[in-house]
Image (cartoon, rainbow, N blue to C red; front, side, top):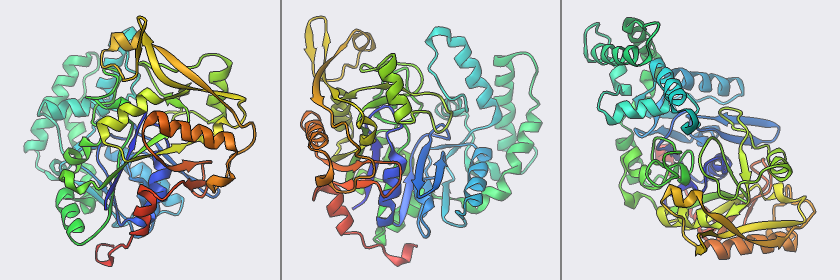
Length: 441
Protein backbone atom coordinates (compact mmCIF):
# COMPACT_ATOMS: atom_id res chain seq x y z
CA UNK A 1 0.00 0.00 0.00
CA UNK A 2 1.29 3.43 -0.99
CA UNK A 3 0.70 6.24 1.46
CA UNK A 4 0.36 10.03 1.17
CA UNK A 5 1.60 12.48 3.81
CA UNK A 6 -0.33 15.76 3.75
CA UNK A 7 -0.35 18.86 5.95
CA UNK A 8 -3.68 19.31 7.73
CA UNK A 9 -3.16 22.97 8.70
CA UNK A 10 -1.31 25.93 7.11
CA UNK A 11 1.95 24.10 6.45
CA UNK A 12 4.98 23.70 8.73
CA UNK A 13 3.26 20.82 10.52
CA UNK A 14 6.36 18.61 10.62
CA UNK A 15 5.83 16.64 7.40
CA UNK A 16 9.56 16.36 6.81
CA UNK A 17 10.13 14.43 10.02
CA UNK A 18 7.18 12.10 9.42
CA UNK A 19 8.20 11.41 5.81
CA UNK A 20 11.74 10.72 6.98
CA UNK A 21 10.42 8.40 9.67
CA UNK A 22 8.29 6.39 7.24
CA UNK A 23 10.83 6.32 4.39
CA UNK A 24 12.55 3.22 5.73
CA UNK A 25 9.43 1.31 4.71
CA UNK A 26 9.41 2.46 1.07
CA UNK A 27 11.60 2.40 -1.99
CA UNK A 28 10.33 5.62 -3.62
CA UNK A 29 9.40 9.05 -2.21
CA UNK A 30 7.62 11.34 -4.68
CA UNK A 31 7.02 15.08 -4.27
CA UNK A 32 4.01 16.33 -6.23
CA UNK A 33 3.65 20.14 -5.89
CA UNK A 34 5.15 23.42 -4.69
CA UNK A 35 8.62 24.77 -5.11
CA UNK A 36 11.56 25.82 -2.97
CA UNK A 37 9.19 27.97 -0.90
CA UNK A 38 8.61 24.79 1.08
CA UNK A 39 10.95 23.92 3.94
CA UNK A 40 11.14 20.48 5.53
CA UNK A 41 13.47 20.15 8.53
CA UNK A 42 14.74 16.73 9.60
CA UNK A 43 16.88 16.20 12.70
CA UNK A 44 18.98 13.05 12.99
CA UNK A 45 21.10 13.00 16.12
CA UNK A 46 23.21 16.16 16.09
CA UNK A 47 22.69 16.74 12.37
CA UNK A 48 19.94 18.95 10.94
CA UNK A 49 18.88 18.78 7.30
CA UNK A 50 16.70 21.46 5.71
CA UNK A 51 15.11 20.42 2.43
CA UNK A 52 13.24 22.67 0.01
CA UNK A 53 12.89 20.85 -3.32
CA UNK A 54 14.28 17.40 -2.67
CA UNK A 55 11.89 14.88 -1.10
CA UNK A 56 12.74 14.07 2.51
CA UNK A 57 13.46 10.48 1.49
CA UNK A 58 16.77 11.61 0.00
CA UNK A 59 18.34 11.18 3.45
CA UNK A 60 17.95 7.38 3.17
CA UNK A 61 20.48 5.49 1.05
CA UNK A 62 18.90 3.37 -1.67
CA UNK A 63 15.62 5.30 -1.80
CA UNK A 64 14.68 6.82 -5.16
CA UNK A 65 13.27 10.35 -5.00
CA UNK A 66 10.95 11.89 -7.59
CA UNK A 67 10.19 15.55 -8.25
CA UNK A 68 6.91 15.50 -10.14
CA UNK A 69 5.52 17.61 -12.95
CA UNK A 70 3.40 19.52 -10.41
CA UNK A 71 6.53 21.03 -8.84
CA UNK A 72 8.13 24.23 -10.13
CA UNK A 73 11.92 23.94 -10.12
CA UNK A 74 14.55 26.64 -9.74
CA UNK A 75 17.67 24.81 -11.01
CA UNK A 76 20.02 27.16 -9.16
CA UNK A 77 18.22 26.53 -5.87
CA UNK A 78 18.19 22.78 -6.56
CA UNK A 79 21.93 22.68 -7.20
CA UNK A 80 22.59 24.67 -4.01
CA UNK A 81 20.47 22.23 -1.99
CA UNK A 82 22.28 19.23 -3.46
CA UNK A 83 25.66 20.81 -2.70
CA UNK A 84 24.62 21.54 0.90
CA UNK A 85 23.57 17.92 1.38
CA UNK A 86 26.85 16.74 -0.13
CA UNK A 87 28.77 18.76 2.46
CA UNK A 88 26.64 17.04 5.12
CA UNK A 89 27.56 13.60 3.78
CA UNK A 90 24.39 12.88 1.73
CA UNK A 91 25.10 11.86 -1.86
CA UNK A 92 22.17 12.31 -4.25
CA UNK A 93 23.92 10.41 -7.04
CA UNK A 94 21.51 8.73 -9.42
CA UNK A 95 18.68 8.48 -6.85
CA UNK A 96 16.90 11.61 -8.12
CA UNK A 97 14.40 11.77 -10.97
CA UNK A 98 12.94 15.11 -12.10
CA UNK A 99 9.87 15.06 -14.31
CA UNK A 100 10.60 16.38 -17.77
CA UNK A 101 7.20 18.11 -17.53
CA UNK A 102 8.01 20.12 -14.39
CA UNK A 103 8.07 23.87 -14.99
CA UNK A 104 11.14 26.03 -14.48
CA UNK A 105 11.56 29.13 -12.32
CA UNK A 106 13.72 31.74 -14.06
CA UNK A 107 15.10 35.03 -12.68
CA UNK A 108 12.28 37.16 -14.09
CA UNK A 109 9.75 35.11 -12.11
CA UNK A 110 11.32 36.30 -8.87
CA UNK A 111 11.25 39.93 -9.99
CA UNK A 112 7.60 39.70 -11.01
CA UNK A 113 6.62 38.20 -7.65
CA UNK A 114 8.34 40.99 -5.71
CA UNK A 115 6.57 43.55 -7.89
CA UNK A 116 3.18 41.87 -7.48
CA UNK A 117 3.51 41.81 -3.69
CA UNK A 118 4.47 45.48 -3.60
CA UNK A 119 1.45 46.43 -5.74
CA UNK A 120 -0.96 44.62 -3.41
CA UNK A 121 -0.13 46.95 -0.54
CA UNK A 122 -2.28 46.08 2.47
CA UNK A 123 -3.67 43.06 0.58
CA UNK A 124 -0.28 41.40 0.19
CA UNK A 125 -0.26 37.59 0.31
CA UNK A 126 3.00 37.20 2.22
CA UNK A 127 4.76 35.12 -0.43
CA UNK A 128 8.40 34.06 -0.20
CA UNK A 129 9.13 36.08 -3.39
CA UNK A 130 11.04 33.16 -4.89
CA UNK A 131 9.16 33.12 -8.17
CA UNK A 132 6.83 30.24 -7.44
CA UNK A 133 3.56 32.06 -8.18
CA UNK A 134 4.65 33.65 -11.49
CA UNK A 135 6.04 30.31 -12.69
CA UNK A 136 2.67 28.68 -12.06
CA UNK A 137 0.97 31.66 -13.76
CA UNK A 138 3.08 31.07 -16.87
CA UNK A 139 2.18 27.38 -16.74
CA UNK A 140 -1.55 28.04 -16.64
CA UNK A 141 -1.26 30.76 -19.29
CA UNK A 142 0.52 28.22 -21.55
CA UNK A 143 3.68 30.23 -21.88
CA UNK A 144 5.73 28.32 -19.31
CA UNK A 145 9.10 26.66 -19.83
CA UNK A 146 9.42 23.01 -18.81
CA UNK A 147 12.49 21.11 -17.73
CA UNK A 148 12.66 19.21 -21.04
CA UNK A 149 12.74 22.54 -22.92
CA UNK A 150 16.13 23.34 -21.40
CA UNK A 151 17.69 20.71 -23.67
CA UNK A 152 17.02 22.91 -26.73
CA UNK A 153 20.43 24.47 -27.40
CA UNK A 154 19.61 26.22 -30.67
CA UNK A 155 19.88 30.00 -30.82
CA UNK A 156 16.46 30.45 -32.42
CA UNK A 157 14.47 27.41 -31.28
CA UNK A 158 11.37 27.13 -29.08
CA UNK A 159 13.29 27.82 -25.85
CA UNK A 160 14.77 31.04 -27.21
CA UNK A 161 11.38 32.17 -28.54
CA UNK A 162 9.61 31.49 -25.22
CA UNK A 163 12.25 33.29 -23.17
CA UNK A 164 12.30 36.24 -25.55
CA UNK A 165 8.53 36.65 -25.27
CA UNK A 166 8.47 36.22 -21.50
CA UNK A 167 11.34 38.63 -20.90
CA UNK A 168 9.63 41.20 -23.12
CA UNK A 169 6.52 40.86 -20.94
CA UNK A 170 8.69 41.26 -17.84
CA UNK A 171 10.27 44.43 -19.22
CA UNK A 172 6.86 45.91 -19.91
CA UNK A 173 5.59 45.01 -16.44
CA UNK A 174 8.58 46.04 -14.35
CA UNK A 175 9.84 49.09 -16.20
CA UNK A 176 13.19 50.69 -15.46
CA UNK A 177 16.26 48.67 -16.41
CA UNK A 178 15.46 46.14 -19.11
CA UNK A 179 16.63 42.55 -18.99
CA UNK A 180 18.38 41.15 -22.07
CA UNK A 181 16.59 37.95 -23.02
CA UNK A 182 19.83 36.56 -24.47
CA UNK A 183 21.43 36.58 -21.03
CA UNK A 184 18.48 34.69 -19.54
CA UNK A 185 18.56 32.25 -22.46
CA UNK A 186 22.24 31.56 -21.94
CA UNK A 187 21.71 30.97 -18.21
CA UNK A 188 18.78 28.63 -18.85
CA UNK A 189 20.77 26.56 -21.32
CA UNK A 190 23.79 26.38 -19.03
CA UNK A 191 22.01 24.26 -16.39
CA UNK A 192 21.10 21.43 -18.77
CA UNK A 193 24.42 19.51 -18.71
CA UNK A 194 24.10 19.11 -14.96
CA UNK A 195 20.35 18.45 -14.95
CA UNK A 196 20.10 16.07 -17.88
CA UNK A 197 21.00 12.84 -16.11
CA UNK A 198 18.22 13.39 -13.56
CA UNK A 199 15.46 14.20 -16.06
CA UNK A 200 12.91 11.67 -17.23
CA UNK A 201 9.28 10.58 -17.42
CA UNK A 202 8.26 10.50 -13.75
CA UNK A 203 4.79 9.12 -14.44
CA UNK A 204 6.21 6.18 -16.39
CA UNK A 205 8.86 5.50 -13.75
CA UNK A 206 6.26 5.41 -10.96
CA UNK A 207 3.93 3.17 -12.96
CA UNK A 208 6.68 0.65 -13.64
CA UNK A 209 7.95 0.77 -10.06
CA UNK A 210 4.47 0.14 -8.67
CA UNK A 211 3.90 -2.67 -11.19
CA UNK A 212 7.07 -4.25 -9.82
CA UNK A 213 5.65 -4.06 -6.29
CA UNK A 214 7.49 -0.96 -5.09
CA UNK A 215 5.94 0.97 -2.23
CA UNK A 216 5.70 4.73 -2.80
CA UNK A 217 5.35 7.55 -0.29
CA UNK A 218 3.70 10.68 -1.74
CA UNK A 219 5.04 13.85 -0.11
CA UNK A 220 3.18 17.15 -0.16
CA UNK A 221 4.45 20.62 0.60
CA UNK A 222 2.66 23.45 2.42
CA UNK A 223 -0.71 22.36 3.85
CA UNK A 224 -4.42 21.94 3.18
CA UNK A 225 -5.30 25.50 4.18
CA UNK A 226 -2.78 26.86 1.64
CA UNK A 227 -4.22 24.87 -1.27
CA UNK A 228 -5.07 27.12 -4.23
CA UNK A 229 -8.62 25.70 -4.43
CA UNK A 230 -9.43 24.59 -0.90
CA UNK A 231 -7.35 26.93 1.25
CA UNK A 232 -8.03 30.39 2.69
CA UNK A 233 -8.04 32.04 -0.73
CA UNK A 234 -6.46 34.41 -1.76
CA UNK A 235 -3.93 33.91 1.05
CA UNK A 236 -2.75 30.60 -0.37
CA UNK A 237 0.04 29.05 -2.38
CA UNK A 238 -0.19 28.53 -6.15
CA UNK A 239 -0.63 24.76 -6.27
CA UNK A 240 -2.77 21.92 -4.94
CA UNK A 241 -1.26 20.62 -1.71
CA UNK A 242 -4.34 18.50 -1.02
CA UNK A 243 -4.62 14.87 -2.01
CA UNK A 244 -5.87 15.52 -5.55
CA UNK A 245 -2.55 17.17 -6.37
CA UNK A 246 -0.90 13.75 -6.22
CA UNK A 247 -2.67 12.52 -9.34
CA UNK A 248 -2.15 15.68 -11.40
CA UNK A 249 1.32 16.44 -10.02
CA UNK A 250 2.82 12.99 -10.59
CA UNK A 251 0.73 11.40 -13.31
CA UNK A 252 -0.63 8.55 -11.20
CA UNK A 253 -4.20 7.34 -10.86
CA UNK A 254 -6.21 7.72 -7.64
CA UNK A 255 -6.08 3.98 -7.00
CA UNK A 256 -2.34 4.35 -6.43
CA UNK A 257 -3.07 6.11 -3.12
CA UNK A 258 -3.65 3.41 -0.55
CA UNK A 259 -3.78 5.54 2.60
CA UNK A 260 -3.65 9.22 3.55
CA UNK A 261 -1.94 10.45 6.72
CA UNK A 262 -2.59 14.03 7.80
CA UNK A 263 -0.02 15.92 9.86
CA UNK A 264 -1.12 18.47 12.47
CA UNK A 265 0.73 20.28 15.22
CA UNK A 266 -0.63 20.07 18.76
CA UNK A 267 -1.36 23.77 18.23
CA UNK A 268 -1.64 25.87 15.06
CA UNK A 269 0.75 28.10 13.10
CA UNK A 270 0.91 29.91 9.80
CA UNK A 271 3.40 32.14 7.99
CA UNK A 272 2.43 35.22 6.05
CA UNK A 273 -0.87 36.99 5.73
CA UNK A 274 -4.42 35.65 5.93
CA UNK A 275 -6.84 34.39 8.56
CA UNK A 276 -5.79 32.37 11.60
CA UNK A 277 -8.89 32.06 13.80
CA UNK A 278 -7.13 30.88 16.97
CA UNK A 279 -4.18 33.27 16.67
CA UNK A 280 -2.59 34.34 19.94
CA UNK A 281 -1.13 37.78 20.51
CA UNK A 282 1.16 38.97 23.26
CA UNK A 283 3.04 36.83 25.75
CA UNK A 284 1.32 33.49 25.09
CA UNK A 285 1.85 33.72 21.34
CA UNK A 286 5.49 34.62 21.93
CA UNK A 287 5.88 31.72 24.36
CA UNK A 288 4.60 29.19 21.83
CA UNK A 289 6.78 30.68 19.10
CA UNK A 290 9.94 30.49 21.17
CA UNK A 291 9.20 27.09 22.72
CA UNK A 292 8.41 25.62 19.32
CA UNK A 293 11.17 27.50 17.45
CA UNK A 294 8.47 28.70 15.09
CA UNK A 295 10.53 30.37 12.42
CA UNK A 296 10.27 29.46 8.75
CA UNK A 297 12.78 26.90 7.47
CA UNK A 298 12.75 28.61 4.06
CA UNK A 299 12.66 32.28 5.05
CA UNK A 300 13.35 32.53 8.78
CA UNK A 301 10.14 34.54 9.19
CA UNK A 302 8.41 34.22 12.58
CA UNK A 303 5.28 32.09 12.46
CA UNK A 304 2.00 33.23 13.88
CA UNK A 305 0.83 30.85 16.61
CA UNK A 306 -2.55 29.81 17.97
CA UNK A 307 -4.35 26.98 19.74
CA UNK A 308 -5.31 23.71 18.05
CA UNK A 309 -8.22 24.31 15.70
CA UNK A 310 -10.37 21.19 15.28
CA UNK A 311 -12.59 22.96 12.72
CA UNK A 312 -9.60 23.31 10.40
CA UNK A 313 -8.41 19.74 10.86
CA UNK A 314 -11.92 18.32 10.36
CA UNK A 315 -12.02 20.24 7.08
CA UNK A 316 -8.68 18.70 6.10
CA UNK A 317 -10.06 15.26 6.95
CA UNK A 318 -12.96 15.81 4.58
CA UNK A 319 -11.18 17.27 1.54
CA UNK A 320 -8.27 14.82 1.72
CA UNK A 321 -10.06 11.67 2.87
CA UNK A 322 -7.59 11.33 5.74
CA UNK A 323 -7.33 7.90 7.36
CA UNK A 324 -5.43 9.04 10.45
CA UNK A 325 -3.41 11.95 11.76
CA UNK A 326 0.04 12.43 13.21
CA UNK A 327 0.28 15.03 15.98
CA UNK A 328 3.62 16.82 16.19
CA UNK A 329 5.28 19.10 18.74
CA UNK A 330 3.31 17.85 21.72
CA UNK A 331 6.30 18.72 23.90
CA UNK A 332 5.93 22.44 23.10
CA UNK A 333 2.86 22.47 25.37
CA UNK A 334 4.70 20.93 28.34
CA UNK A 335 4.96 24.14 30.40
CA UNK A 336 1.27 25.05 30.25
CA UNK A 337 -1.14 24.65 33.17
CA UNK A 338 -4.21 24.74 30.91
CA UNK A 339 -4.64 24.27 27.16
CA UNK A 340 -7.57 25.70 25.19
CA UNK A 341 -8.79 23.67 22.20
CA UNK A 342 -11.02 25.18 19.52
CA UNK A 343 -14.05 23.02 18.70
CA UNK A 344 -16.16 25.49 16.69
CA UNK A 345 -16.66 29.12 15.67
CA UNK A 346 -19.32 31.62 16.63
CA UNK A 347 -20.55 33.93 13.89
CA UNK A 348 -23.41 36.36 14.35
CA UNK A 349 -24.81 34.38 17.24
CA UNK A 350 -24.65 31.10 15.30
CA UNK A 351 -22.39 28.18 16.20
CA UNK A 352 -20.38 26.91 13.22
CA UNK A 353 -18.78 23.48 13.35
CA UNK A 354 -17.68 23.38 9.72
CA UNK A 355 -15.05 25.62 8.13
CA UNK A 356 -16.69 28.50 6.21
CA UNK A 357 -15.69 28.96 2.58
CA UNK A 358 -16.63 32.66 2.60
CA UNK A 359 -13.63 34.75 3.63
CA UNK A 360 -15.80 37.54 5.00
CA UNK A 361 -17.63 35.08 7.25
CA UNK A 362 -14.35 33.57 8.42
CA UNK A 363 -13.00 37.01 9.26
CA UNK A 364 -15.99 37.58 11.55
CA UNK A 365 -15.73 34.26 13.36
CA UNK A 366 -14.74 33.91 17.01
CA UNK A 367 -13.28 30.59 18.14
CA UNK A 368 -15.22 28.53 20.67
CA UNK A 369 -12.88 26.90 23.17
CA UNK A 370 -12.95 24.17 25.72
CA UNK A 371 -10.05 24.09 28.14
CA UNK A 372 -8.17 20.97 29.12
CA UNK A 373 -5.70 20.62 31.99
CA UNK A 374 -2.03 20.83 31.12
CA UNK A 375 0.55 18.36 32.36
CA UNK A 376 3.30 20.79 33.43
CA UNK A 377 6.05 18.20 33.08
CA UNK A 378 8.27 17.06 30.22
CA UNK A 379 7.08 14.88 27.38
CA UNK A 380 10.14 15.68 25.24
CA UNK A 381 11.74 12.48 24.04
CA UNK A 382 8.97 10.17 25.33
CA UNK A 383 8.72 7.17 23.00
CA UNK A 384 5.91 5.08 24.52
CA UNK A 385 2.31 6.21 24.73
CA UNK A 386 1.83 4.81 28.23
CA UNK A 387 4.77 6.93 29.45
CA UNK A 388 3.00 10.18 28.57
CA UNK A 389 1.41 12.06 31.50
CA UNK A 390 -2.30 11.19 31.89
CA UNK A 391 -3.25 14.78 31.02
CA UNK A 392 -1.26 14.60 27.77
CA UNK A 393 -3.02 11.37 26.84
CA UNK A 394 -6.36 12.99 27.64
CA UNK A 395 -5.50 15.94 25.41
CA UNK A 396 -4.62 13.63 22.52
CA UNK A 397 -7.74 11.54 23.02
CA UNK A 398 -9.85 14.70 22.99
CA UNK A 399 -8.20 15.71 19.70
CA UNK A 400 -9.21 12.33 18.30
CA UNK A 401 -12.80 12.86 19.40
CA UNK A 402 -13.26 16.41 18.08
CA UNK A 403 -11.31 15.68 14.87
CA UNK A 404 -13.07 12.39 14.20
CA UNK A 405 -9.94 10.40 13.38
CA UNK A 406 -7.47 8.19 15.24
CA UNK A 407 -4.02 9.53 15.99
CA UNK A 408 -1.46 7.23 14.41
CA UNK A 409 1.75 8.99 15.45
CA UNK A 410 2.78 11.44 18.17
CA UNK A 411 6.02 13.39 17.83
CA UNK A 412 7.63 14.40 21.12
CA UNK A 413 10.76 16.06 19.80
CA UNK A 414 12.68 17.13 16.74
CA UNK A 415 14.78 13.97 16.39
CA UNK A 416 13.37 11.18 14.26
CA UNK A 417 13.65 8.81 17.24
CA UNK A 418 11.42 10.97 19.47
CA UNK A 419 8.24 9.45 18.10
CA UNK A 420 5.38 7.26 19.30
CA UNK A 421 3.39 4.98 17.01
CA UNK A 422 0.20 5.15 19.02
CA UNK A 423 -1.95 2.19 18.11
CA UNK A 424 -2.41 -0.79 15.83
CA UNK A 425 -3.94 1.28 13.07
CA UNK A 426 -2.96 2.64 9.67
CA UNK A 427 0.76 3.10 10.31
CA UNK A 428 1.29 -0.05 12.35
CA UNK A 429 -0.40 -2.16 9.66
CA UNK A 430 1.52 -0.34 6.98
CA UNK A 431 4.86 -0.86 8.73
CA UNK A 432 4.15 -4.56 9.23
CA UNK A 433 3.69 -5.11 5.51
CA UNK A 434 6.76 -3.25 4.35
CA UNK A 435 8.79 -5.54 2.11
CA UNK A 436 10.71 -3.49 -0.48
CA UNK A 437 11.40 -5.22 -3.81
CA UNK A 438 15.09 -5.14 -4.58
CA UNK A 439 14.39 -4.70 -8.29
CA UNK A 440 13.53 -1.02 -7.95
CA UNK A 441 16.39 0.00 -5.65
